Image 1 (tube, rainbow, N blue to C red):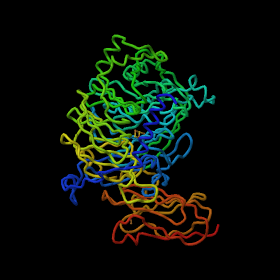
Image 2: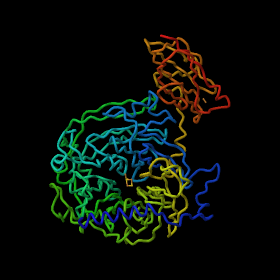
Image 3: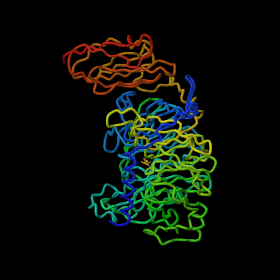
Image 4: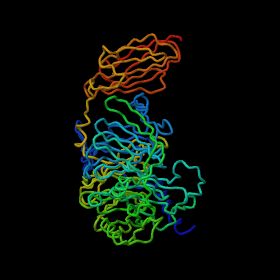
Length: 636
Ligand code: CUK
Ligand code: CUA
């Protein structure tokens, strides 16, 4: 065992020890802490917390400081609760070049910004597994767009946004042979490449389009952040496995003393693309859009991407050495400092954007990698945070020049000063924190009142529920010099990244009314007079309306075994918060849920003769139980 693998083993053992022997203090329930998280009945929380659901494939919406769960937004996973992925209108959202993929592993959230500040327009999220990014609207609180990412394997360095949401950036975690080439795995160094997609975001509609992809060396790309303020126009990526190992069995990927932070001048890349220097490559990927007017999703398969090979352009990319397997790569609110969190390193380097620019101007290089300049470590270094903790992962910031870094192995949050690099405070987390979030923490305008820890292990913190314990978050007050633990709250799914945003930016716009007269769904029945049943061959189309407290039509006959029945249910309500549901016995799909003014369709293939009841599934009035009907099925 060499020295390095030794070190890795020690870290892993330490992590194991911590996980097995949780130690106190387990509680901090002072009335002071309770008062700070208490949101009186009928009152609102100050922040929305938009939290990744990890392998649940969804996003959780919580209130801060109360930690109350408001909503689960399905993104990459079907949702029986809302009918997402079950209704005919939403099924295309989960289409990919591989077909219908109703699950994914959602890690990161990016809330849209303007001039580096949260603007409350959209949330973006990544699907790691079948590489995708999604856009959720804060008006509809619904996934409105999903874009598959070609040439990507494990879409982890994603999605991160530029200062004005010009681009959403998605970097591949695994390098792979491009264009699905069938090559021996041990030809890694020769054939495997990285790929980073720059996805243009339309500022009006939010629609995403892959503007270009950068072809990069065969590393693993873990996380990234855009520059802001002085560093606007740049993007920084943490890279590990710069050894380009294709098996991790011998901890191959951690042999080097330093890996890299890759600095990309995306404004330059944009110029080359505008000059037509990109090369068009074949690549299949799905682009799915939910239309607000028709209330329907459509999926389009696209065939091409434009590629720039960074090694062919001398002034797009630079490598900064960063010890050791950097995970998080975070930019402070001023845009000057870039924090590299080497998860196997004993200190944390902080780089200076000004110094990086000087190093580039003076060519203060330490050779190159594959033709791409490697900046001299010291030339870009602002300084190192010494012995901060074990296993640094992610850093967020407050507005007073402080940084908060999560340490997975030593299970703590450490507060330090970005300029002086002095460690100011540390608090334990229970246990093994992954990401953390300060409201506005990744933006140029943080609201440094709280930091929220998203933990990997919850041993002994909650009532046990079998071997699978709840996932969990913890809320800390950071308004004073010392951090104070206020609250534990469970989360649904494994929380990776999350962002918290002032509620005032979202609250009012989300009270959206879909006007029935603007409903352009071709199957809408915009009043009870339009409710009807039509036969087209063996298809039965039921144009149904729902309003408190009846479904129309509520007695349907003339349907045979072998017919395909489409229930197009239009919710005629114009009170913005009165959805109706619809379900029928034996349908392979779940229920559907129809928002006021909308139309959603449930498809059903009756298998046997008889009379089958259907009903509204969402309690909507005192006569909710009466919102039902019968359909008669006759032998074919
Ligand atoms: S990763 Cu989960 S702790 Cu996928 Cu953002 Cu760092
Ligand atoms: Cu409509 Cu219950």
